[in-house]
Length: 358
Image 1 (cartoon, one colour):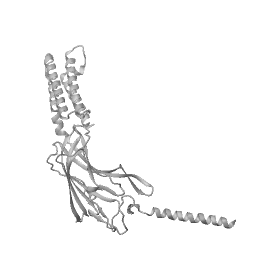
Image 2: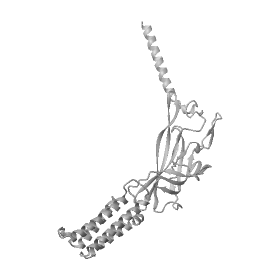
Image 3: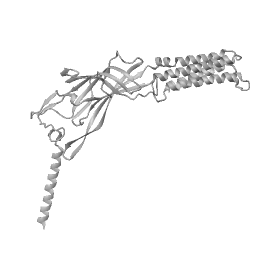
Image 4: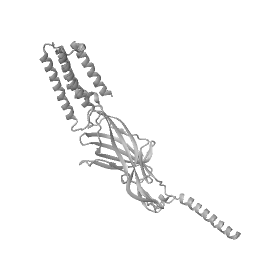
């Protein structure tokens, strides 16, 4: 009896040790280097390549143009530096050739291809500069990019133009990030950048996405690859002061003309009304001018609000003129034309400044 119990415990102990050892061995295996699993390239301990292969991206914006509000796109001409620890071709100890050109793994997300689009890579080889001792590549690129314009703050709006570098290969194999020693920059003297805009800053962020492609990463480990997206955010600002004067100069002149009506004697009622009506038509015409500069944008902007304020307060000035004419309506404060004009001016200025700075 004791012998049977001893045999059972011995059997369980041996299997427990074997099971534990098996777990340790399995956990210590780097399946990505066996060649049997993703990325399916057999590597030995002597092969001096390690996953993930990192590409660092430097962005320089040469030019921005065709900032198309109605069709939601912009055109950019950029130069990208790409840096990596490995040469363009890596030959393993087994004699397998492993291409590592960045254009095999990195693409740029665009709207459409221009007829004269540019997509050219250059290989600069090993860069032994003190700042960056890596293999260097350069991409010259020009194309159309998607952008959903947010014009609620127009003409004081800021836009975040996105230039996105994508690698659909799994993060365990290839990854991209902003170059550590070369921050993004831009050409301060662009030839085609629209007047009234300026670049404030360029930042970057990284996100991940699931691809439709499945791969086997180890025993009983089949999943879809997870790609990396490096987004450079180009923050541009509209120089609102110049555009503000251009857009609303007509409405402000109309309002000043309306104030002149308070200097006309009350007995000249028809002249006072005619002057205010002319100012209203001028403000309405200015509103159509502003609308034409924004094409068919279905959103209420700050410019719309300011135009409506102008028109409504011009109507209010007419009401004040009628109050001064009609003896049955008693608003003592507005009996004096100077009081009416000052009140109208203060109300107009306060409302416009509230819209501009809110």
